[in-house]
Amino acid sequence: MAANPWLPLQDALNTLLAAAPSPTESVNLPLMEALNRVASQDIIAPINVPPCHNSAMDGYVMHADDAKAGNQLPIVASIFAGDTNEHVIGRGECARIMTGAPIPDACDAVVIQEDTERTDTHIVIMETAESGANIRQTGADITAGHCVIRAGTRLRPSHLTLLSSLGMATVDVYCPVTIGLMATGDELKSAGETLEKGQIYESNRIGVAALLNQCQVNLIDYGIIADRPDAIRTALHTASQQCDLVISSGGVSVGDADFIKDVLAELGKVAFWKVAIKPGKPFAFGHLNKALFCGLPGNPVSAYVTTEQLVIPLIRHMQGESVNAESHRQLLPATLSVSIKRRAGRLDFQRATYHTDEHGKLMVTPHRKQSSGVMTGIVEANCYMLIPAEAEHLQAGDNIMIQPFSIWG
Ligand code: AMP
Ligand code: MG
Image (cartoon, rainbow, N blue to C red; front, top):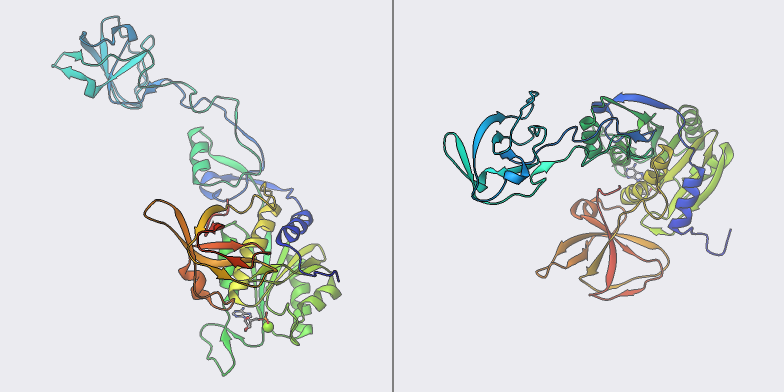
């Protein structure tokens, strides 16, 4: 074992990402089912958006040379959005036009309604409009033939809206990865069971599953496994046959009932099992047959933080998304509101709350509960505050990076 057996987070992430196989299979899905899936091909726009010049405002359309303040013009037509007729508007004439309605050939200006005075049959223009005014030009947003979404992009609601505007009904996305989840611990009981002295309710699987569901995965739940090598061996072996990635919680540290590393070494290969982060130091990663394996710490906050910081980037990579160890976290600079004294050594993901002060400055305050077993700290916080591994003293007013919750790209 090296002098410092704790792997820095960045090195751990690089190891995970390097081990992640790239997806090979894709499927064509209706847009309604494609949310949060990863595009497997570059998507090329088949048409211009907008497909034709159209009005950006409610007003009057005309030749730009007629759009001069003081001009009086007869209204010769009314054009609504969706109108497919060919309207001919001559010099010295105008047409009433609604937002989204097509601009007639040869017209090149829209005077907004507010800049006109109207009688039954005519308008008087109060403000001159330039050529092109209030007109959305053909292809101004998207030009046919352009790549609008790169392969490896996770499809968010905005992407699906854009694809719909191109007339696309389906999209090619990578097949989801299959993930097996289990919790180890003799003390763990399920909801509905009565707790005997020394027992607790199992809570890691639901939280981890909920975090993973943000990535659209196929999840197989293997339940609660006893702290016995034979039970763990059977569960890991079965899961490794059925899954691309197997995740367990608990039993990965140095206690006398911590068998995960030994069984992993016996059935497969341990790549590392200590990461220099807090919470979450004991985190095992390795190979189990063809599957990858992540052994989360049992403490609920540790399991949650390591899922977010290590497992989700791994899954995103396995799903074909373009991620790297540096970019997967979206950090913001903030100002620390209190002083902190701590022991150096691990990158600390303190649970914290950010807000803007009366000058608009982004401030951050650590939650008072930082124990790795205490979920209320994370529930009441809105961000992680990242204390660098080497920092011992931080002063109120220091700059510090934060990672707002639920922003993972
Ligand atoms: P371990 O990593 O197995 O040593 O567990 C560390 C702590 O986390 C112990 O207090 C366990 O009781 C607790 N713990 C382990 N697994 C879970 C779980 N699935 N749900 C809630 N608490 C757990
Ligand atoms: Mg345990």
